[in-house]
Length: 114
Length: 112
Image (cartoon, rainbow over all chains, first blue to last red; front, top):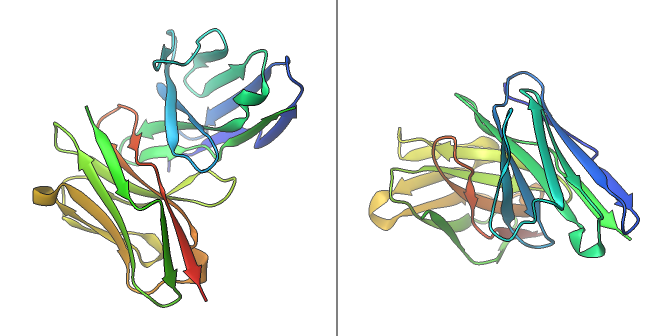
């Protein structure tokens, strides 16, 4: 199979603090990881694409200095929300594509900033 | 550019009735198409996918979808709805190692 483990599943943080979300590929090497954000009752919107060993590519309108992505190994990609504010509260999901299994998704992280 | 349109943000059916969730796509290359289901506060679960083989694709939980190139559609169906089918459904496209493009989602309610 192709399993992506995402942690934590739920986090509450104070405004101004930083939160790190991890996605690990458990049984394959994920050279590319996609990071999505989903606001309530909305669809998944791509934030950025991370590639192992290189800088992430951010979608238009996503602040790269606020959403730090690190993909230092083939099995771990992290998203750090820096100086979080209530408007950053959302559901964050990572995804990777592994032939022949196709796209696989993490279980998501519910971030609440208070 | 690739895009996915899901018609109807909310569909309500009676238990035992036919489920039909609509999806149309736009792609300049032959697409791969996917249907995912999402339960509250959970990630996405793949229901089925079309990857240029058979146009009628059978998935899990009794769902199936038919790829119709002439209509650029990939509608999801299930003959008989169960209460456990109530969830959010997303259609997605497209291919290769590019990120999936998602439709806006359709919330399915099943009435007893």
